[in-house]
Length: 447
Image 1 (cartoon, rainbow, N blue to C red):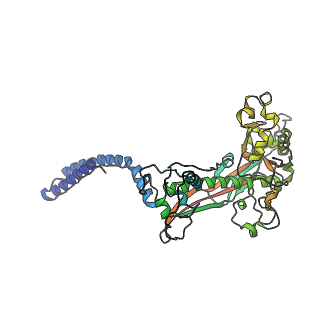
Image 2 (cartoon, one colour):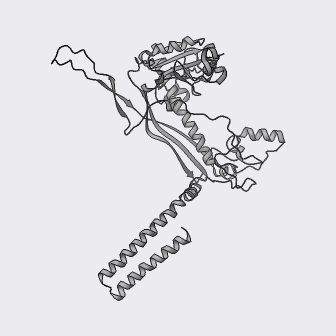
Image 3 (cartoon, rainbow, N blue to C red):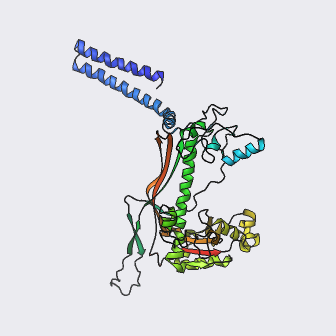
């Protein structure tokens, strides 16, 4: 509060005391008391309005101060180096950049070790925060690669008031008949109803870092950690939708082989969340998969034919592939030259915007696969690409809890703990064994 605000408040408090004393000592009539009290109330109302304005103007500073107190976040560098005062929001240099700079300039990295604290990240452990401790360091952010969400935003989303949550749907419209004779009722028909059940599953990630990392690093660790957790969660949600398979045995499409998923890599793998796009075509309805082998323009038509009625509206469909299949596609003669693809030719744009009227997207979450379309336990088997055509309105993403980031302290371990979590659900229309809304092309030769 400003000095002016304090002075005005004191004046009104003095007025309150004066009225109280006058009422007590002089015994004023009731009417005079009410009039003075009404004036006092009006003055107080005006003063409160002014104080609210002052508080609103300083809300940002208060919020920043609270963030610094609770999370350790600092708006500017304060680590006792020549970098003090620089803006720390979202700036960091990856370790390999620092080491490359050191190699080129002959900078030594020998430092006195800090206490051996139990923590996930320390200021003296390489690849876990050590690279952020300044030893002559540029205050710029360099990121080797940042993943972006491509798939999650494609699909309709609903909030789930309960878990599970039933979403009513119409599976068939009423039948229209030819009217026969005058004054004669037609046959009755009703729309066919059903429901989709959304069951939310939790996705979580946690990063811990020591007080020393936050104190010694040239960058602000808290916003960096939160930013990277958000990107990791976006990628995980895309992966669940594209690759989800709840099979815990050896036939999981993401870990196909002899050992079960449960025994080999545990039950916490994110692809066990639900059954997704690849599962629908490869496993649930095998009539919707196609061995594409050498990718050609005709293969796009093959996948469309697998969809039946769902292929009729190109704007409701999308192509999704891994990066290697996309590289193969942009080099197809049907897309690469102006005479065949016009000004959108991939030779000019480097992009494959649409194929048969549907957008073409590539996702990092689609991995190289084996000749059957599954990602095998034997890594050497996975050398081929995948191409999907998906009718997006046929899938529903439910949200029981939006993405949430929480921060807490462990004062015994001297750690900050940052946890990101969400509860999401994924389901599709129709009976999975007969639904044709999702087609999967596999065995794409990408070399």
